[in-house]
Length: 371
Image 1 (cartoon, one colour):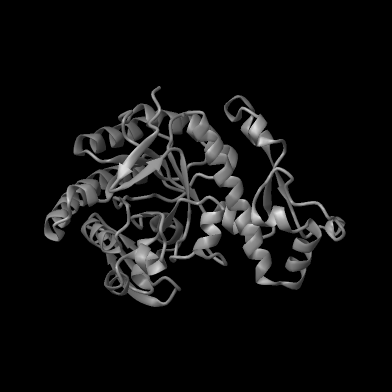
Image 2: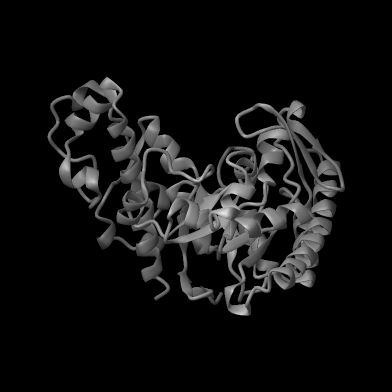
């Protein structure tokens, strides 16, 4: 398999693989842009559903788009809002309803009663107003308890919506007079659950429509809660080699390694930032610069560090002796424990910087394997 090393987006080069942390509401909680850049983060993924709810698309558009609004110099991806079908509506019907026309949300970003209509066309309009570098077609992302019929409906809708998104995308490019070299990339999402026939059908029809890249959509775990690497590999086999593949919502560091091995290029998840706030940090078990990541059991490369343990109250060592982040280079385990113990926000900040640096270091090392 020939691995795609990079693509050009406007005047910028996006090198692969790459990890985008989730800045859902236009922020990585407790961090500013300097923290992110120093941690090696090159791009962010943002959520149009939450942003159209608060502060509102009109405000962000008027202020120059999401990157100008955040003063973010890196790359930005906007998700379609499809994941909210799984995380909100299919989990709790009071949040809204899904039809062939699109999605109606009955609640806003903070749970308030507020109606938002998100059709494939509206999703593209919102994302282009946000001025992201990569935008994603609206897809029907079924819930965990989906039946075969639900998956069939999901695939049918996803294909139909992708066609509508592509048509609206081309319409908006003309309307906005967007130069060819300045257009955002448009990605479509492959649905179908663990059924290879449905995945193949979805991939085949999306390729016929034609997109700049493709995503692995839906629930990525198998029945045991592990990454479904068999389906991951199968989806890649159904897609063009020269197009980037996005493992949406993946994942743990070892899952990124395994997904990279089978052909994925882009990764995003809330795991490192959320777990940092909940006192779970990642640490290398051995010097990553001296290990071949692709020939070592991926799970064995990492261990968890829990700073709330009493035994760390006098521990002067860094959280991870192989890490060059701000936390590990300047503060001890004892001090981090103290910060969490007193509930100071600096604990969140340092822990989040650390976890993100573990991820960005992982990406740097994986790139060496395709250089």
